[in-house]
Amino acid sequence: LEAKEEFSHKTLAMDVMRPRRNDPILTVITQDSMTVEDIEAIINETTYSGFPIVISRESQRLVGFVLRRDLIISVESARKKQEGIVSTSQIYFTEHTPPQPPTAPPSLKLRAIMDLSPFTITDQTPMEIVVDIFRKLGLRQCLVTHNGRLLGIITKKDVLKHIAQMANQDPDSILFN
Ligand code: ADP
Image (cartoon, rainbow, N blue to C red; front, top):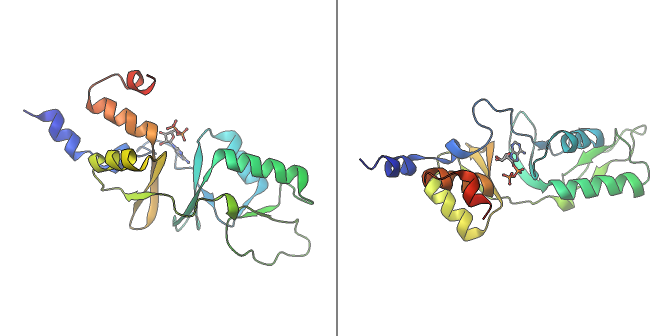
């Protein structure tokens, strides 16, 4: 009759991570195939605090994580201060940038603002352990992978909501006091 207890032991990272089954897909940034306007569109169309950076959409291999505020500052300041940066300028999070065709506008290198080793767990990690990791490491977010492919994200707030649900409380009540 320890239903709640049993349930809580069985909750896995994949049950708490976003996106959920019917959600829109995870918003990611690719390391070498987006332009200034692509990044500005992501900034304008979402409110997420950060974005995983992947090698390519097809591979979904994680290479890093970038905070929204760092992206905004870097792109805005490049637009103002960096000669030749326009909407079609390519953005690179890679170490090396491929040679540009002579007609291409200058590209923008943003590797410096990328967190090169964001914390990751697999989708099968029990939430008990995830909660522990968030507490002990003071994480703000954690990325979820399966066989090396990026699947989702869990934020601190997602973890707090999960804890509240486990405790059968109104999630909003513990979040804001
Ligand atoms: P918080 O959880 O503190 O509100 P965010 O605004 O970053 O932080 O995230 C809001 C929700 O969206 C969370 O449930 C989170 O799991 C999810 N989320 C965060 N980043 C992304 C992303 N890049 N793509 C899709 N969902 C995301």
